[in-house]
Length: 180
Length: 202
Image (tube, rainbow over all chains, first blue to last red; front, side, top):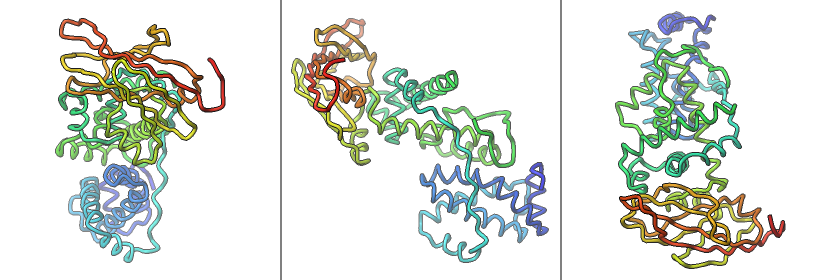
């Protein structure tokens, strides 16, 4: 299976029963779905579950040729992610139904490559930030408070907060990259 | 840095700014903006890989915060979350002009000095860390406080505190008014007694 297949070609081949195309769909979409899951579910295992469920739902739809605009595969998968997350939040019914239907066919999503991070260097870079930037960065990533909460603590507007946060992230990235 | 996995584009004509990806990751983004980012991420593995780098950075910052090794001003919510995470917090409260006996044990994970001050009318506040003679050694400029607050919670590096010998440290809060004039808002003396095995002096 060539990875050069377009989304449209992939959809058509899956519709014609090509199992290799299904494997390519899995390889192509699993990392994207997993990132979506991490963002919205904040849990690795839940993100893995989401990936399996969305891929099975997608393959089911493609096998049945229900995707009328094959070029919109990415949109379809994204939409399925959104609906599945809503379902997961409502309860586990959909998950159980899909697992029951596909059972042993479910494969574990592939491990994602994880960029390395020099922890000591990060500590130096964070400590070198301006005081406000350091506090904003830590409050944002550690506390995961809302923008309004962080802005309220600092006595600044949310717009100003965003400027400080963006500047800090750029400085951190520059600091990390120049020392690698 | 690892190569992106998955099919699709390995380059991007309009890569998403990492700061925007960070906003997306921490949920500081309005609906339509978030939807546009997600649509892009479902078509672009290059930006997906950049998002993974942001996630790794965010995780690294979380770990740093949990280590208690950053010298910084913190919020009450930060301390609340740290306590919820099971971290052992040692906090000393001190009034302007006061002094306090303090220490740190092997079990402590976060060390806070909460200093009281009247910050009204100040445009900017610096923290000055001084030696026992009051000579300034380090200045943290423009700390994140605003004039409505009556105290500042300062986190001292737990790593530093655990390795420090018995010593006296003087902290000053210095305020600046509209004209840039500097005035001392409060001076605080921490008499640190080492309670862990280790050196008696630097």
